[in-house]
Image (cartoon, rainbow, N blue to C red; front, side, top):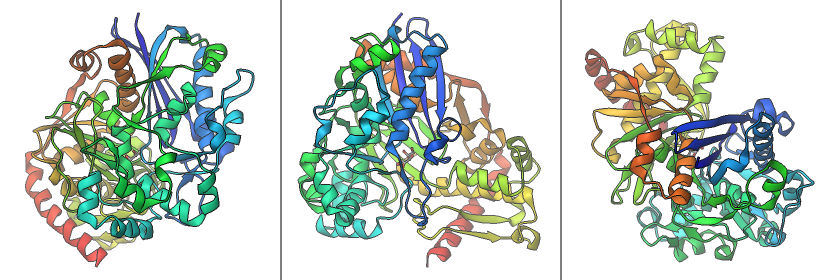
Length: 519
Ligand code: XUL
């Protein structure tokens, strides 16, 4: 009964999934929700309140406590952790955790909660996360010091990007040089999780998540001397070693054995980012499949056999945990923005879906630029919503039109900005919380003129992490794991061919409105 655990430490929750590769089946799937389960951290959306809309930080101890709670809840419900042979973690990308020199010799004691033991090891109390857009100045400085945008893109696969870890580290170094100096290790959220599980001081960062830092030389799989020097002094010593995603980090720390009943020889595999893990969980790690993920962030990604970068500077190249590379484009105004429109009109998700069914493709000309939050793609640093269309719509008095307008804008923007990824296959895979909503999916199918297929299992990042553990520890072939777990739901969402011409026109209008907004 070989069983493997995937943990996804994401923006709003921590999810755990255990797969049994003999049956094959998912034998445990549970979630710790930061809003519901850990209200003391005052982070209902996964980040701390901030006066500056561009600053988004979280308390890393919330992620630590969520891990304990996940294990404890499953144990109490009768789940036997000793049946798990291998573990791997997924983490929200780009976020970073700052530890002092004491982390190296730390050993967890089973008698005290983990968060209590990690607290004194933090050199910085909060962690900037992927939603932070406050480093425009640092991006410019890094770009100049490294020899220009083309050079940064060629080395790291992305231009210097506000939420990426390198610019965030530079900002920290500039604002708090003394605390930067006392920082002995900077982890990504994902590698921090593997450090917690193993206590191995040199817990590595994998190429999948490491590529989201503007520090990794993608071609060589090493930290780039040029990018390190352009970012902050003494940075190399503070970073964990970069590694392939299937590297074994070590056995699980005795804390988890004594406290929750894990077996002492359960192995922990290097962590990766949530999008690289999702690529695996969707069965899309071999070139050919493209994925739309509709979650806290909306993303579009695909496996990429050889590196191709986005000349417009929005797209990214990350390592593919199954080998080679992946492309990705990320939109910050995802689920939260849909939820805010729903909340403005007091709509349930069913009503939100019905509103889409009751309005035509093209929305009778009612359109939106939906930047409630600062946006990553396209870069919008001052949040702003613009409405175009009937007076009623522009006065926020037409709920159904507002719902369709926000989803159409999201789909049009995704189509507009994902062209560099290459020829789109006729069917796209979809995942993420909002992919359960048929109305939302119909708009994406119509805008892309592509059939959309969900998988039968939600939470593709946690599933992908579990599959990575099975591949690395159990030597199970990728093809076998995809066949067993990445099973498409038989019901597909078909595009309406009559919407094609409407959206060709809407795409041109949308691009023009974006231009106007940014000029
Ligand atoms: C990807 C990105 C987001 C986060 C969400 O570059 O910033 O998708 O990974 O957790």
